[in-house]
Image (cartoon, rainbow, N blue to C red; front, side, top):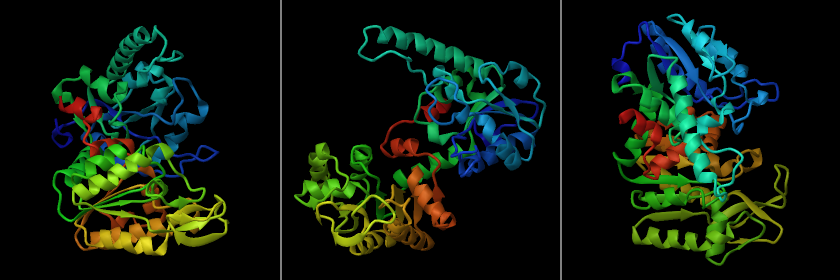
Amino acid sequence: MKIEQFNFAGKKAIVRVDFNVPLDENGNVTDDTRIRGALPTLKKILADGGSIIMMSHMGKPKGKVNPKLSLSQIVKNVSEHLGVDVKFAPDCANADKEAAELKPGEALLLENLRFYPEEEGKPVGIDKADPAYEEAKKEMKERQKAFAKKLASYADCYVMDAFGTAHRKHASTAVIDEYFDKDHKMLGYLMEKEVNAVDNVLSNIKRPFTAIMGGSKVSTKIGIIENLLGKVDNLILCGGMTYTFAKAQGGKIGKSICEDDKLDVALDVIKNAKENGVNLVLGTDCIAADDFSNDAKTQVCPANDIPDGWEGLDAGPETRKAFAEAIKGAKTILWNGPAGVFEFDNFIGGSKAIADAIAEATANGAFSLIGGGDSVACINKFGMADKVSYISTGGGALLEAIEGKVLPGVAAIEA
């Protein structure tokens, strides 16, 4: 069922949203991007004359109640955005009364789903090596089903609109759907946009296609890199990964971040890129610092010849030019991961150069998809969100989709 075709009049909709938003020490929302992202779906339900039951996780409470991760802290913010006074159910698994009392046009937010271990469906307090683990896993799967059934009992229909959790087989994302028929479960507007954006990048490629993969570790991106090598024309690898590649090729990297057990993987990537005719763009120079701090002394030096006691924290001027060149002529662009320690203002130059080049290419007709928390934070920090085609709300989900994996949260609706 498509959300656009569904009439929510008189219906209670349970909506899986992603309200895992950052809070300051006083519990105030510091970035409401994810809340704003859910509004089209939520407002459609209210406008039709339906009522909403919102469910989400926040942080990693590991199946235990943690007041610092309570969704009660965001009720005011959600109410302001939605334009209705959102009610709150302090126990997501015992919200029958609150759900039953909901009237058309009203909204209810359930407490953090992950206060219950059943949401993630992993056995608690038992090691995988323990002989009893498999039995505990089976028991937890049954408990997860019962938890999902309880959540489903609050509503007439289910809407999956949390792309950031679509790669997880959790009770609220890929088990709850079993309790609704195909005419009463659907993707929300945000999910539809996310799925279409990924499809645009991977299945509807306009060439040249440039992908930019940043971040500190090769290990977390290797699956995506391997999948992209068969699709892209240009692959920029930046951030901390630079130094694993530099060392793999015999370079001297000072005290820069490096995965010594992935040097052979780095060499394989270089070899595979060549075999696939992909232009692999690696950093040739960097901004090195004598300390991991914004106020450290800096020098520009070759990425493969960093002095002892110094570490590469950002892309250098020549590298920025090479990155910009590979981006500006592209018609499809994917960016995941910064080029340096962008949290420090003195080391944002490389990431800013990437953002500027993407904005220019987008203005010239390219489709640009930005995904992953740090890349999104970069674009927002530079005030350039309106200069790119699409910003994804999903980090891990986006990466798994790009890797070619089926997302349980999408498959569950389409089944």
